[in-house]
Image 1 (cartoon, rainbow, N blue to C red):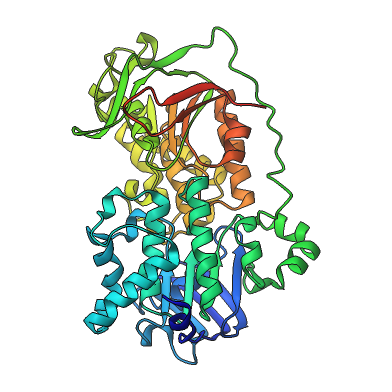
Image 2 (cartoon, one colour):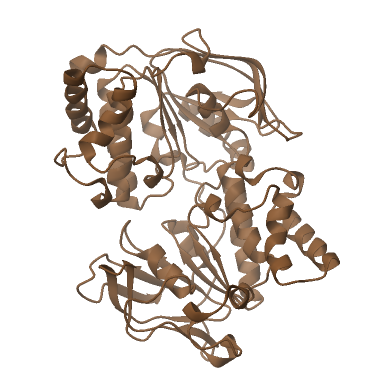
Length: 503
């Protein structure tokens, strides 16, 4: 999108009058009592605690929230004076997960997809595709495979696809939550270029305020109890309401997590659970990601797996968890940990894994199988054939521990991103495994729920549970991890460094 072309896109107005939405089958409203007006061209950072309804509001503005069968609404929500669902292409939505937004195999085709659905003439489509890719700084050929892009590049690709449709309302729902620091910077700089050249109205959700603070001219904070908690220019809101916002779960710049990294190195003689002599890992048989990996997983300690997007962190975590076969070498459990199940976790049966290794996937929805939160937490204990009274007691304990008790009868797929993450952790905790493998356990969490997850994991460590956590969250790694193992992303040589986390 050239500067001249971008200027032809007028910003959209947004009006909410007592607006609220309740998911089907839920007693509580996901968001309620919202009154606000956003003028064309404004740049807004939308904040609030996990579960306050930020994503629900953004999805409603994008016209993708669903009809009457999906839930109930009240009040009024308008974009340019009309219902959001009635005007195709007036809003463009960018989501958290880079992979979930890639549709086609080639970059050019992927960017063109939205325009084709809007019926834009063919010649105009390809002008828009080229302009949009230039705007986001994704300098790859149009026939470049989308599967070869990094996480940050995929988010810029998705942003280009949105821009090519020339929306008057640009909506970003935690677009950097799944990215490494380099990817975060890529996306932020791309958005900055867009905002310099476009008159589109801009709304972004992000728990980490500092990323977007200097790109917006207004901050709106939703209250989890309903309505708007704060609204104004960024400096005024963050200064005058800093304490109040922090208490509500907002990551206020300069305040940090409020937790001190007090952990020490693992003491000598700590029991080993797993070791990896000569381990090589692979996503497919033909794609070895890293070789010569030598790590030990120790009881009562936390090992952080770090590195850039695409380096193989999730692949290594799944291999340690006994869910992916090693491409070379082995993952071996000590006899005490294996307890008659054999030395290689990859050969263990699912019931043998349940009480030994619990895995929390990067995408929480990939592990949900039940219709309610309570039923989801009961799946593991029931598979172990525990008595019904014991299952109920354990599930009640986990619900309260993760502040999900008020959502016990809700459908897991209707939870907020932060609530889904806490539920995914809870499903594993319900079976009390000796080793917990977590992929990005803190993504999508506000400050309050971040602290709760850290406190919960700290408690598990003190009880002797071992943790392996994939994370881009430097605060989390510094606070929780005893050791850090960094993958550099080059499979041809030993591409890792290991050691204690600096204090």
